[in-house]
Length: 180
Image (cartoon, rainbow, N blue to C red; front, side, top):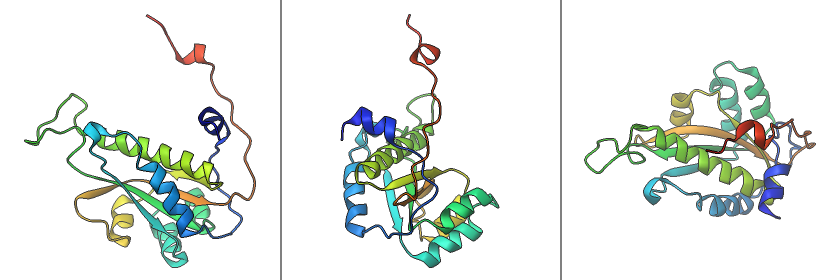
């Protein structure tokens, strides 16, 4: 699959056909995602892959801050991936000071790059995904036993798509770009 084609064809999938995703397929996806660039090659993103129906349902019911749309999505996804990052590295110097005016924002920036790389790798493996941003990070972290030095960045529901959503409209390059 060509990269540009994958970027144009990949969709946020919120309805899955119920077929389990093999752990080896998930491992292949993560093996690709670890190639995402990161601050000073710090490689701080981490992936917790959950295929326990009981745990996914618990997070759906208690970890979505009452946002029913995410609860509904998680209730029928076969796999939930929690992307987290090791805190205090991206954007920091060894003495703990910030390197730039962006301060600690680089942590989330790197997690975002990692998450995007993950969903593109999943698409290549035929696995649909959607990134969920409304969640209770403390609750999710506690439920999955996240180490204290990590923070939840995003939840990714994953599975084989029930159907492929249509592509939403996009702005043209002229609308979002300027030359100086």
